[in-house]
Amino acid sequence: MDWLEISVTTDGEAAEAVVELLNRYCRGGAAVEIPVDCYEHELAAILPDSVAPPASTVVVKAYLPVDGSEHELRRRIEEGLWHLAQVYGTSSGAAPIPEPVFRTLAEEDWAHAWKRQYHVQRIGRRIAIVPAWEEYTPASDQVVIRLEPGMAFGTGLHPTTRLCLMALERHLVPDRDVLDVGTGSGILAIAAARLGAHSTLALDADLSAVRVARENVAMNDVAGQVEVRHGTLPGSQPVPSYYLAGGALEMLNTGHFDLVLINILAPVIISLAPALAARLKPTGKLIASGLIETQEEEVAGALQAEELRVVGRMQEKDWIALVAQRR
Image 1 (cartoon, rainbow, N blue to C red):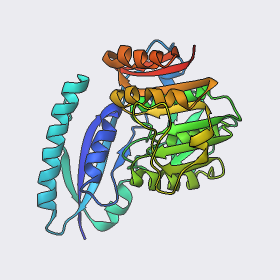
Image 2: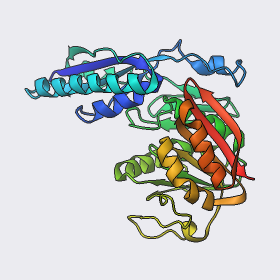
Image 3: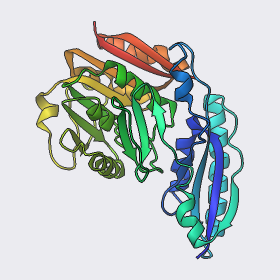
């Protein structure tokens, strides 16, 4: 069978949104090619914290079988990318996503094409995200996270994920307990375990994300430190009522955490502020990412209303991550 390759060139900030769209229609999931000469971590290591490194260009690729259905699916993908470009450009001020490039590949070429350019991505000073199939020898102090490409959220390409990982690297104290709200691919929970957390409870309201996160946790051999459950914290309630497919977790009833992570949208962070604060130990810290610069004041205000003081701030382009703790 021949395959139709869809290729979209964009920056890391938009890549995960493009991946999510292509995953709706394409077989095997989308993959992200990271040019070898485009590692912003190399600049980040020498730039001061106040200076954001330049955005890197990536290529998102996905594949459709040439079986007669590809014409309608191609039309839907083109329409979806057009709408995404309008929304993305309006909300972030970024350049519109260009039109996709299509080409036909034979079966043998398709089997390897999506893996060829997916490289190790280094974030912060110690973290490396490595393709699951790639041989990699880490430095003695390096934290390695293995992931399959094509995960809709949490591949490390989006600024919000990178900021959260860098903040986690700075603020996690070993042998402490962590709560990851909205775990996605599980990348933050895995990083916490690799950085020395005693235990991490990872929650997601999406059962598909729970499945993916569990697979990634198992792949990284941290199942003994990370528990992934289907659930969430309540919106605007200090008492942690929640839903869980597998039954109640005693840790959410009675436990408090040394570090709480949330990498979602600003309105969700604001609505969950009481519940997030309720889960923190008196000396605990909260890392909140997913907000843009214009939302920072409102998010900080919601945290301050729960007696959480902003003690740290990281920025990449328009994206912000805040670190807060008890007053």
